[in-house]
Amino acid sequence: MCRPAGYICINKIIKEMVKYTGPIEWKEEYNVNNSVIDEHHKKFLEILNQLGEISSGGDCNNKISEVFFSLAHYAEHYLLREEIIFKDYPGFAQHKASHNKFMDVITRLHQDYKSGKDDICIDIYDYLNNWFESHILEYDKEAVDYLNSKGIS
Image (cartoon, rainbow, N blue to C red; front, side, top):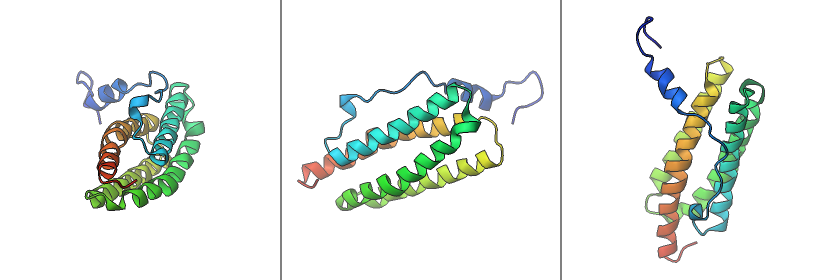
């Protein structure tokens, strides 16, 4: 919440810094060389880009339900399948916990949307973009690299 006039609202500044600058294109360096996992990551990137497009087009409130539906499908199908693949990864429990936290955050954001929270598309885009950069591009890659090094695919 912002302080009285004359003070800078930090939350507003941070939210304004998270701007959609166009779709994120899939790059070869994003591949983890596991076709199933790479397919999942590309699907997630499609959802992220879909959200960016509707947010920048000012149509968030009318189309955000589509994004939540896509995220529910992603969590149900892709994250579960990834957990089956990663079952032999030593960091599996922590990895699964991060997936559970992802689902909890998405549920909370959906509740925020239903309660009429302002800037919900910005909040969701920021969270998903961070998930893409930190979880998908780093954490998942680390897990796949480990499994590949042990001959497990």
